[in-house]
Length: 320
Image (cartoon, rainbow, N blue to C red; front, side, top):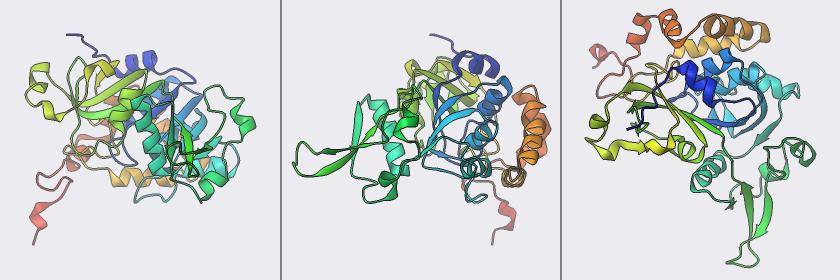
């Protein structure tokens, strides 16, 4: 059995490199690998080609901190808190972010195609919309960035139905994926409870994969129910035990999202000055995830614990 367990600092230092094509698991305010994102910020990693999927505060912080060279996305928002993440929006309005927009279904299918090793992906989606008529990143700019495809898409004829036009979109070539899971064993076998989002796809597709987990369990324990195993060990480069590693987002069956924290970030991210102050307080001013948890506080984290039977934190004493 190979042991892939390391510290968060070691995992980010070794497997996240400047200029990587990188993707995070989770979905807006669900199971985002926030502990890893904060460590990326602390270590000064930069120039990412982001294949973001449905993103939120995770990529908004990296965009606001100037760490993203090009951003491929469908939307970026902390669901229920911000309609559009504010540093992301500010960078676009100022023309300071190289950004391409696909529909959510196409981004998800592109990541699935990456896990299958497909050379490109033909879809009917987006046809007749501005998503094909308008390019966020011009052909000229694309040719200046090595890891970006030269085209957003190309029209092609369906070879099995001559005369039918389809949209051929590029398949991401992921260098690095980071996902947060409920349980993992030392060899990298992962249990994901609830919605998988695109976590499995990016774990299979990427050359380097960091897994942060709520619980580090034995291989004997993980073998007891193979139906729960979602990511095989041979996909994973590093395993890091990071309790509450998705905070302030939720982790299904463990804890709910921290809505006041997300709102505080939403307020702080309205201006660059307040955003930088937020990062100083919650990222750069802390040496580790453990210091972050100490600052959040045990009582606050305890209130987020999921109530059995609900799937979210609830006060059952107030039930009718």
